[in-house]
Image (cartoon, rainbow over all chains, first blue to last red; front, side, top):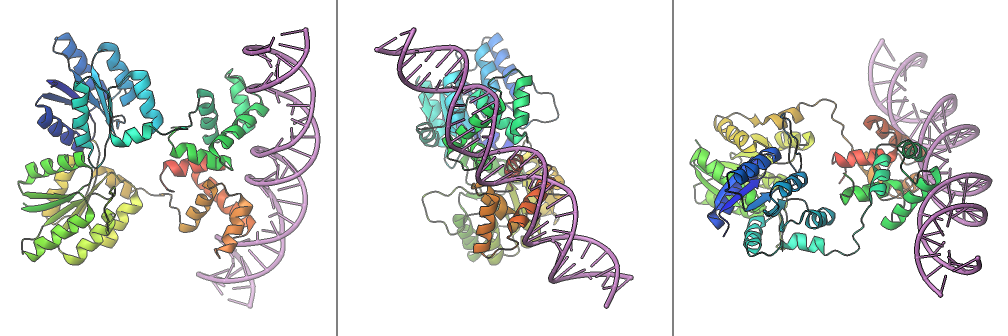
Length: 222
Length: 222
DNA sequence: TTATCCCTTGTGGTTTTCCACGAGGGATTC
DNA sequence: GAATCCCTCGTGGAAAACCACAAGGGATAA
């Protein structure tokens, strides 16, 4: 079993629960950090001292306090950690259940497991630790069902840009202006209109308002 | 200090964290229940056996599993518990930070403390336990600032109805029709338009799209 | 009562969005 | 090269939303 594990979780009562559970299950040295920067630092130090962590269990969203934070999200943290220690195993333990986010974590950052916090999150986490130790990847039932959804509508950068401008109160004409100024194409008034219409069709939305509500609920724009 | 405490929290890792922290702080008998029905039952039994709980620490939102649940939320639980044991002390420990919900809990159910889960939620919870034991009410800094917010934008039932119809893709004319059919007033096309405009002004939104995005982000419509 | 205020509703005109048609241009295929 | 497809983009007209002005009505207070 793993002998040295680090946990990144900011909320103190969750942190406490995870640490005790993981420690009880693995009997490993379980360290913890409340913020991303600190996590990265600890991993870096352990590596320098030649006693590296074997497993990182990380949350995705972190509340930022008054301090300066260079890394502000679990996603960034994972990216940074992979740079300094590519062979570390990573399990994400998060309340987040959006398929797109999970997929991107597996595809872009090669995480080894994903467990959704929930009624029985801790026992799923234990299963994940065991599986990852056995060189397998693991997804808990909740995230598995999310991942296996077909027809997950994905938005490309351009579409997200459009929707983002929309929710900022831009009119179609203003969006067109903005795109022209920022050298993004297509950018004609007419094309903007067309793209938004296509999005409405894709999501089966009758109005832009409904469209925005839907993509927002699905977490496709942040 | 309290000697018998019960904790209602469904998420297992949070539950574990709270229980260990509370036990360490109070050295009391700390029982726990994952669902509301079970919590009520335990409190009832303890009362019958003449060893009642002195303090209930409860979450507000509960994930329901496959079983039948008669009580489904922390608010309901508190209401029921107050009926069977009016003198029990209650501290709400929740992620919920909406002022309206907090206020109604203090006013309608006379809870003794409110602590928001967060970076240092557990230490605030300990302070709350001490304060409540000393017959004081307690609000953590986060909830205190939420409670003291002025100009909290509140939506009444009518406005929520309007916004709900909007996100369902209704046009203004259709909203008017719907309101007339359901005997809700005001319901003229013109008034609908006006109310939506007022909402835009209140939220400082340039378009309906931005308005919907904002109220959605604020959790004012579900 | 009168005056005032606020909300509802109507009217009409402007702005914005929506949509159908079609022209041009790039990529692919035969 | 010709045919085809898809995306961009312009035009013009219809639909929807926006907005200013004002009439009526209910509540309140002097």
